[in-house]
Length: 53
Image (cartoon, rainbow, N blue to C red):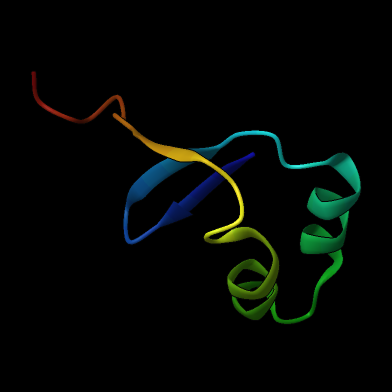
């Protein structure tokens, strides 16, 4: 699962398909993300194509 916030791209590992589907369907995606994904799955910051270096 990729999540883009504040221009930064994060890759979340091991998010089950049903959790991702529920996130996509959620009216309040930020709330769903905070309640069900953030701090529950490993993640890493991914460099974008526009990042220098």
